[in-house]
Length: 163
Image 1 (cartoon, helix red, strand yellow):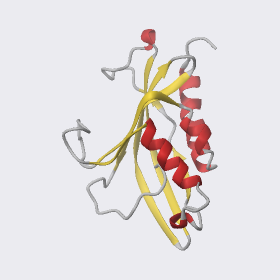
Image 2 (cartoon, rainbow, N blue to C red):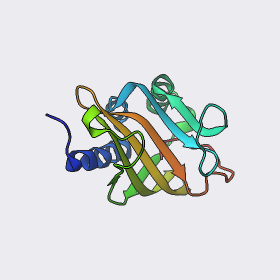
Image 3 (tube, rainbow, N blue to C red):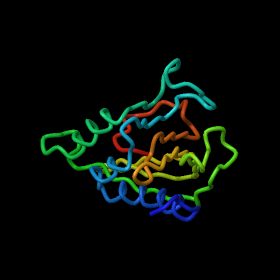
């Protein structure tokens, strides 16, 4: 495949959501670049994950640990397993973002979402925006996934999966 077109970028975001909904965590993790991060800011408009607290700020190693825990047979906090479902608005390619540079293989895709996480009788709804910083290496990969929840500054129970 050559450089991705708009449909490839949009399909990539839908594909990632489907992998998560289907609990295909190992395949999902393979979508991430080695230097990737998954970030959920704690405050609206937060610009720096290192100088401020975040709900999540995990590199690929920590994402792998989370995946291993979710898939582990002896992870009693995951019995029954948490399940998630994402409803995505059509992703929007942000060509005006300062880090967007299609000629250099850097693409920014923003998506509004509603996400439901359930385990047993408990169900939690999250809503917000996901911003994928995608890079073209041997294929499209996620360098950064930033998830901005509408109510990011609210008190949350444990977020088990990946909104």
